Image (cartoon, rainbow, N blue to C red):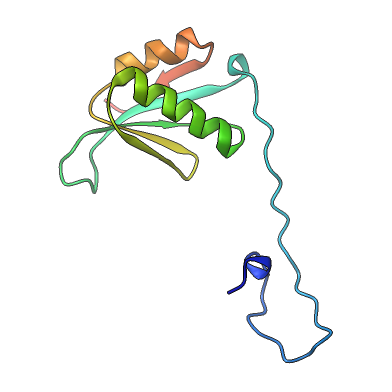
Length: 114
């Protein structure tokens, strides 16, 4: 499928040369300041082969800002991770460390899970 029709709604293909695809409107969310955001930090090991990851959810903003925050957290913890679907995954059990780092950056944090 062509990139220009990636967000087309309903119609897969049309033989009509004058047909116009209806596109879904995807607005880029503006990043809220850190003091207005509450990030949830939890330890997760479901569907990961028993490996522990620290999961950060609740970020409101652009993908670029989320990626930058993810990169900074991974560097401070000295581990790898990923950033997808509006979540940050940090390899390993770094819940308390990440809560401290986010608090110093001005974010409000809450721990989820046990």
